[in-house]
Image 1 (cartoon, helix red, strand yellow):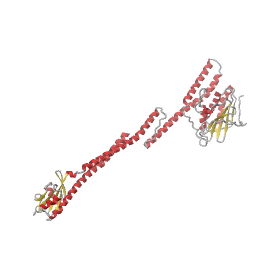
Image 2 (tube, rainbow, N blue to C red):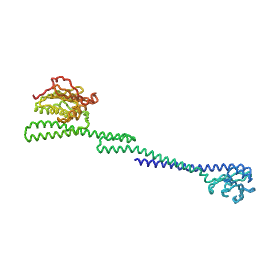
Image 3 (cartoon, rainbow, N blue to C red):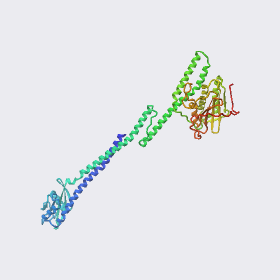
Image 4 (spheres, one colour):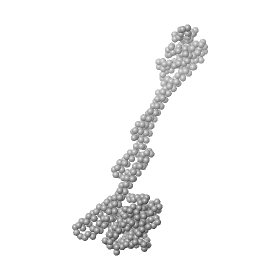
Length: 483
């Protein structure tokens, strides 16, 4: 692109210079010729008054000498008593062979002099080494004298070479300047394009942080903005893919928990040992997948218009699943607030995954026989889901809410609470950890019903606080217990 722009500029500037310089050069030459002939006419006019008074040779020589052009001026006067020309009936007699009185060196031919005398007007003729101006002058006797002024070629071309050299220098300077400007413009265009190409190569090589500076012409600036936007989208898509892998893997931990608990009750024997070893290996593989994918930035989109689910139905369904495990481990459990439909702007699968993550944490991190409860509270602009237990509680709630900070020593990946947090924040709500009335941990999920724009709670990423003791559940709430 750079050299193409230089070539185009060179061609265009050269054509413009030629189009203007050649006519100007011809005009300069013609002006120099006209100047030389004008000077010759002025010298001839200086002799004309003397010729109109006298034709004496001595006096005319003094006049010519006083004019300062005796070397280049000649005066041709007809001899006394001879007519200027005669024409008989049917026959024309020219004065080509007539005798004349001449002063100075004659360079023009007799025919040219006779033609000027006959026509009565000035004429210019070419001679050896230049040209001559033949100026007719009327004498007192009525005859015509001719003043000849020699104009050498050097005087005709005086200053023409210098003017042409100046024009050539100006034209060359214009060409060089245009080429330099075109080259700078080409560099200004090529460098952003090269950076765009380098950025594309780096992005193709897997360097997701590759970005292009927004500079150069407007078109390349727009291309750089589009490239950076595309790179951001690629990074976001990859992050979403990694996040999806982590979330799906984390959801596998729920059935794995069931398998682990069931495998623990198989007793002794080779088959039971193999089953428990297989479950442990599968759980390790799932944890490895989660830890590999957990570096991606969290990204959860809010449910679209018309999307959502019945939170009460989802809570009843998931508690029906976990109640069987609770019965096997001797855990008391309670569910409240699910006696009527509660619509929330959250996908059914996302709410189920969040409940499974919280209830799975209860079963994994509390001893057998520890009671737990799930409460659903429906307000005017928000729905609150409370998951509480009677376990030892969480020693560091801040660390528990931080994504990916699970130590892994107790089987925690640090993603369970993050899944819950992203679910709440997708609606403009938040998640808080406090102390429950059962004596252990309470996780409160605040779900906004009117979306992100209507809430001032947006940005509370995993708020942690010690919660005051809640009021007892209403009598209308349904309470179920296995014991």
